[in-house]
Amino acid sequence: MTARPHDLLRIDPAAVASLTRDLPGWAVAALAAVPWVVVRRAMACEGKLPVGIRGHGRSERCAAWLPPAAVVECRTPEDLAAARTWRRPGIPALAALDAVTGLLDGWSWGPAGSVGFELATGHPTATPDSDLDIVLRAPDRMSPGEAGHLLAALAPLPVRVDVAVETPLGACGLAEIAAGDIVMVKTPYGPRLVRDPWAELAAA
Image 1 (cartoon, one colour):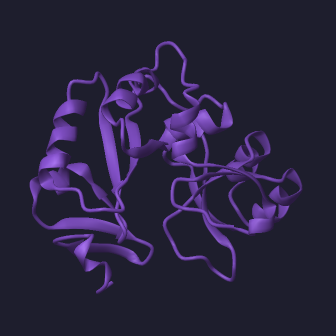
Image 2 (cartoon, rainbow, N blue to C red):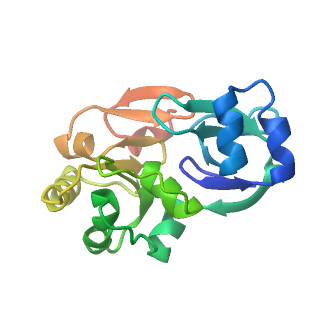
């Protein structure tokens, strides 16, 4: 199957035991309760997908490798944005999604992080202190002016919005693109410093 970083995958319960072999106890318990993982930014290994398992806090994060045959459902950030099922009182990161939908009209985008995990799984993982992580697809060049305009539009929201711009080379921060200087791009091979993540694809 084709999966991209930040996609959320539901696992066949019968495959959980083999996936969690040699993993921490909290990871076993987390997948038993909520059998979902997130795709990591790494190369596939022996045909297996790079995935991450999340527990109750930031200290409970674990990398694993998942056979594609174990996946029974895939929810992309774009799927979650289109579904618009984010009503939960008292969570600013969820409440802000209505405004973000209007501000990012015309772009291909979706929520990630704790908000994305909650929307995909139905399991409450976002807290009143959660940031709002957004994946913004940009297969074509985004100018510093465009990035700056989006930053200014998002700034008044009552929650910190962290936008990862997915370029052909990898992901970089919206603020770095707006600055118009060297940006750090997260690639499947590790981070790279480049001047233009669109122009440098051929040299990658």
